[in-house]
Image (tube, rainbow, N blue to C red):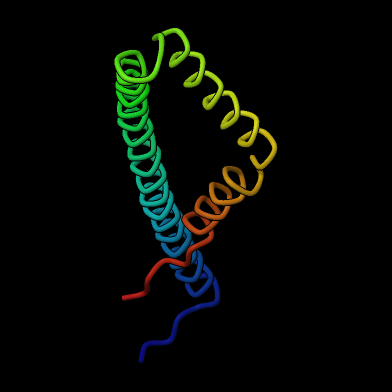
Length: 120
């Protein structure tokens, strides 16, 4: 072992500390990129599912109105029934929005954000 002076030791320590901090910053950036990519993929998936559900719901409503018009009564009555059901669902959604929407979204987001990175 070679003897180092105090200033050389301090310089070496400073270099190692700088390298360590640089690596920690890089690790933090990588973790944030992973979390943001998971969040964005979850958001895109949610949007796609909502779009598909809206189309399916719209076609189901239209099919009900047409069926009602042919078999049970006038189409305008079927349309009013569909609007009434949609308004009832909207009112229930507003009443139970925390339990049905906010809590699951917050739970999923906090799970993604607070998840510890896997050490390999």
